[in-house]
Image (tube, rainbow over all chains, first blue to last red; front, side, top):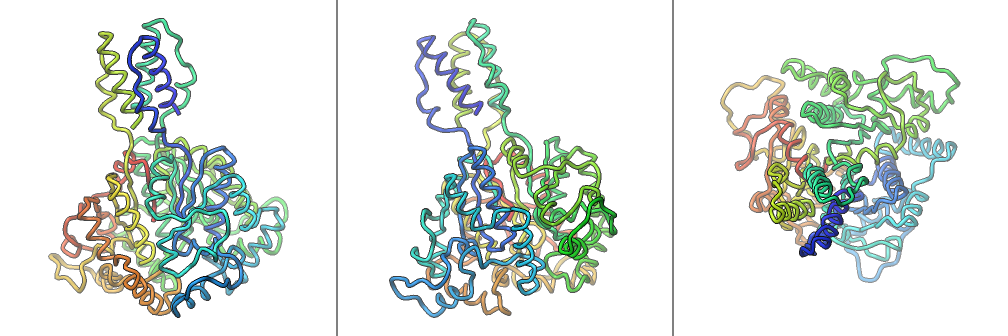
Length: 188
Length: 188
Length: 188
């Protein structure tokens, strides 16, 4: 922020003094906002990620979330989806063993065969904490950019039609580019 | 840093030249220091977090640590605490199942029913590495700001009187605000 | 970046106007590049770390990776190594129980007694994703700085001759110093 303002002052000053304005400097913005990798597919970690993303977006910061590895499961639609092109046996197995969407994640500790997860969800509802599905919708509404890692999709055999709408498909370079323009970077 | 210095130069220059000084620019400091989320309650991860926090504080950097989810357990006092107001059955269960303070955490790998944790602690003592409790005390003495996530406290039914002294109570916005002013951000 | 350019403009301006140039400001570089802690020894997390490191290096950004705790295992040479100086029984036990190098790591989820790990590796080879060992070699070739945490080495009884060549040995201060000069910081 201060850099931009300084740049403006200097530009104005240059103009006032009839000196050439440095056009290049304005094109490199001061880092701003939040970029995060969501690698985990654990309910508790993803909840934390989405609460941070929504909070930053509510504070008018640009937010990019890069979903990779187990994190991709958060973007999956519920139920088996008919895909174009064949899946290999391994890909089918990955697809059926991994959780399909936010409703099917488990917490990373005290899951106790699903009991802990059910208890946490019940407490969240009772205490008016938004569910993961609601947090995801809210983030998208607030303009948080969701990026699905295409390399992970290829590795796990996940097709575009299996993921929710309104997301971008890109590789790690896109995350690094966003992170390099962000003040805050997190790996979750 | 360089931004601030530039600002000073520009301000001085503006005064030298009798041009208006941009008062606003100076009020937005260059990002500095470290902000971290401690989400994990695993002994090994929290040790790493506290070693980084102490190191940064020793290098005179401002440090904020936001304890959320399982990370809250690090701030719990040992033993059951009598709290004002009733706890629900679920809250009591969470309270009794989760570790009460730094002495009761386990390592995330090779715990082997507590044996691995005991061995690591023994090695730490033998090799004069500070214990987690000592690292926490040292961080607080060095001015590291500890923030307990009030949303997690509410969710898990943890009351203020159950947590150690000298900490701040706030929500995710406070973390984002601190992180947005920090050069380094970590999620642990 | 913009800060540096602004500084240049101001310096030029100061010279144009015959005002003193602020020498100090130029000596504090604008944060740039990526610094990450690799704490985890899980194959999937370390793969993500190395893909990000290689990507950032390919984009000509300076990258530092600080390997600590379980992350140290990635730097271990395969097979038992004869070390100078004796190891204690505990150190020998740690050494034999922890994985020796990138070929011996397991994924953090769906490992299924090694079956999941073998399946992921097979899919990676089939889909021409570089193996972890190849990613490590590529990162080193691209000039990524690998730092082994000496405090963790001491704690776990790992000796320098047990780790791969071309790495730096340092403590957390070196990481913080690198991170404080980096735009992106991650804990993996």
